[in-house]
Length: 309
Image 1 (cartoon, helix red, strand yellow):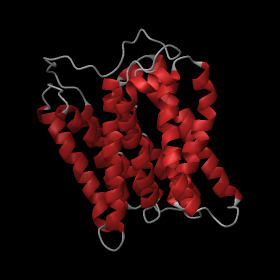
Image 2 (cartoon, one colour; image 1 turned 180 degrees about the vertical axis):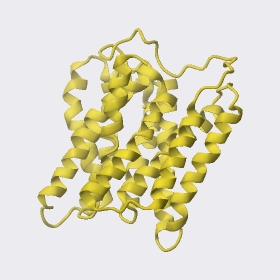
Image 3 (cartoon, rainbow, N blue to C red; image 1 turned 90 degrees about the horizontal axis):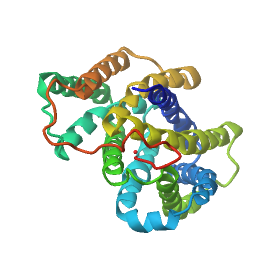
Image 4 (tube, rainbow, N blue to C red; image 1 turned 90 degrees about the vertical axis):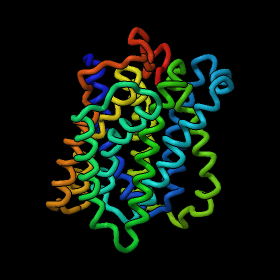
């Protein structure tokens, strides 16, 4: 991996490890639709001036609206609501650890979408170990109202694993800003009615406002640009490996700022999911017999074209 790739990887490991903390703080005071709307609206407002400075935005949307719509639904519209709603009942640490299953699902989906590389014993073992880690984490929550929340997080995982594949296959020639700005704008518009209907009657506290601002600025506007460039640099499957780092950041932040307990079950689940993800996404010795485009050529720079998720 290049120095640029390592920088983007490290940046994303931290930036997308803290949303779980911010979501937990925000959703305790405002509704999930308000959280998602605010996050999308702030992100879109920040990126729109830069997107408009580049020519061809309307033409790009007209030419690629189908895959862009699919990307928006699977990466933003659906997952951000299900994750936010789930954190009304789950701790930020648990949500962050469950999202670590994204690379495992990404491997399975990549195979489904035509990757001809054999999984091999190592990768199958990794999938099994990772799923065991998810089981260790989820079983204690299968009673009461947590089962629905677990289902919502698993839907989030599925969306997060699928959207990068769509972006890399069908949107690799779309500039980063021309992809993410319309998607965020669409999501904000879709959540506007629900946000208005559930808008808080009084101004939330300063720390809730700070959490909402952080979600919009850092975890959305900055994060998406960095993530799409990371996919361009190393491809969607390898980019999803940032979820190795995200749960550690999520657990540490939840413990430090929210007083969430670090139980033995969390430790075991983290170790299993991490080990399983590493094994499942490690390339085997066999080669693909049919090339599959996952990202644009390295020669393109961020200011030229995105190669996209």
